[in-house]
Amino acid sequence: MKISYKEIDEFSNNFRRLAKKYRSLPDDLELFKKVISEAPLGTGRHFAILYIQKNVKIIKARFFCKSLKGSSLRIVYAYCENEQCIEFIELYYKGDKKNEDRKRIKQYLKSFS
Image (cartoon, rainbow, N blue to C red; front, side, top):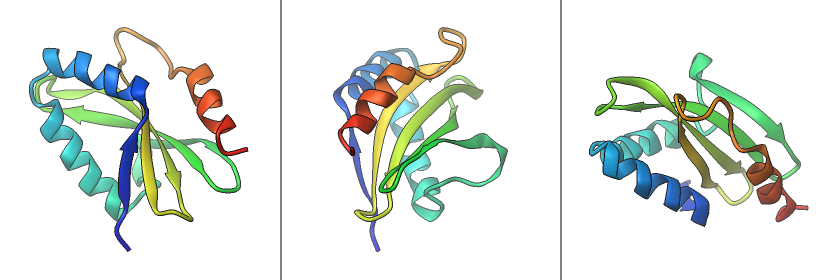
């Protein structure tokens, strides 16, 4: 089954802002999509499940960026198993922000209640 991808508006804004700084970001995101289409919950220590609800799981992962030459970016996304859909919630630079935006995640989860 094919997985569909969506993004919330705040993610789009984060992505556009960071893509100006890190030119490889659009290609890096396509590569990331290929990885998570094989294993939506991720594999290994670079992925962590933050929240589990009946219909959705929120996952945070290290996001590898060629422009940065490392894993200083983090991406937060929701995996909706029933719909085979992944929705991107947040992308941030680890140097600017220590943790994910929990308010944004809670707001996102409200739409599933």
